[in-house]
Image (tube, rainbow, N blue to C red; front, side, top):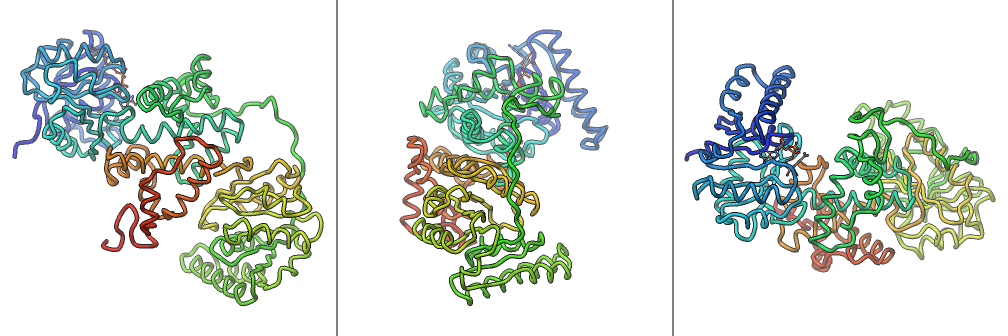
Length: 591
Ligand SMILES: NC(=O)c1ccc[n+]([C@@H]2O[C@H](COP(=O)([O-])OP(=O)(O)OC[C@H]3O[C@@H](n4cnc5c(N)ncnc54)[C@H](O)[C@@H]3O)[C@@H](O)[C@H]2O)c1
């Protein structure tokens, strides 16, 4: 079969256009580059020559390959040259009127069978297509920056696009070594549609002073394995660009969660556009620099010192309790592992021994360190033994009645001045605190699973938590080499409050038949560098667990956009809970 589109015109050879032109020529296609004028054309040629020379220097391209690909690219400023192309890819600045008039002109210039593609990020492909007399041969082709490394290409169809035309362009993308995903015409398409809603919530979270910018960013990197925190990413994208994309998303969805957070407007008005202007959420060494400079905070004040912690008790015998005991014991703390019976406690210790053994087998832990850690752990079936510990971490079932009963018991048994921490992920810490006569001493310590491996701990202070209690837990985290982030006692804390609305948006996208499970997962992994796609993650976390968290978030914030997607409810009702039942968004049993 003949390769699709042997000659392609690229109109606009800026950041994206130059990258696309090189990718096309590398695949052996003829490229007709068109710029706005003779000076711009010369500059574009320089850009292409410089970027390919860099690729040769870095060993990404052979010198002969470079010569061959450059020979395939012509650059000029005469749009009528596009008449010789089988496909025109437009990559001019993001301006609807500019793009519409360009498409009207291309429609006059090009033969009727030529396919016209726009590189828009957030404008309506349908409105651009409407400027031509061939809307069935118009579509969006959304590459990601930098084009040579990013494998994702969103192929965007309008209601009028001929499916065969879209398939041809998808095939072209595959031929360029890219991974095409099919999307409909909606602001942000798949990847940015999901990404920007989340970035917006992070900006709003910062704006409400719920947590610091550093803590929000660290929480998402360490809690979800994301390559960058949301506020650092907004600075990289450019606050003005992000705001424009969100405005376009809001204009279409009317979902308040897409309305740009007011702080984005304030930053733009102040000229604080992110890295490119030297300041956005963070301050950088110079415009364009990625080096963050520390700033003196006007509201900084000395912190209270923490209480002394020499011994620790952990209540529970499940996955989290066992993992947390391992963390403390490995750091040299004597730990009482307190369960409902001596037998359960012994079993949890045996579980811990197996986990340590695995670390030894993998060469991550010495035998001496294993023995030392195990010797520090005392299993007990009686909470009375916790009387003298300095800190108790509760990690029992996620059930408020069970937790309150335990806190009431701890209040009776544990010495005054001890810190009482809960590991709850979805219940109010304050409800545990008020089960005691000493709510000042109660704090949240939200570990992530598996606790020995995950660096993040969300340290949750209620309105009643004493400052030195928060300080105790922060200091302890440092001693056990965890990264603490501080937040208030609100549903989802930082990570889940930002993660689950995004997962819910992905489910909604699927439910609306906007894109498929595979395409959405691919888009987030390749377009945003996420370690897992949303549906892979939902299947791992468990659909029931996810639904509960979404319900808690919706109950707390009453935001219509946070209501759990009906498709998730249906799957849970049908017993499709993810990997653990063999079926969730994907069928795991048959794999
Ligand atoms: N930069 C990104 O990260 C990114 C990522 C994906 C998609 N996009 C989208 O790609 C498109 C191009 O963005 P960019 O970042 O490359 O912009 P850019 O400003 O770097 O490049 C635009 C180029 O178009 C040229 N141009 C302007 N008017 C023209 C005309 N009438 N005819 C021919 N050339 C003309 C300009 O001289 C310039 O070289 C936009 O729609 C943008 O939203 C950008």
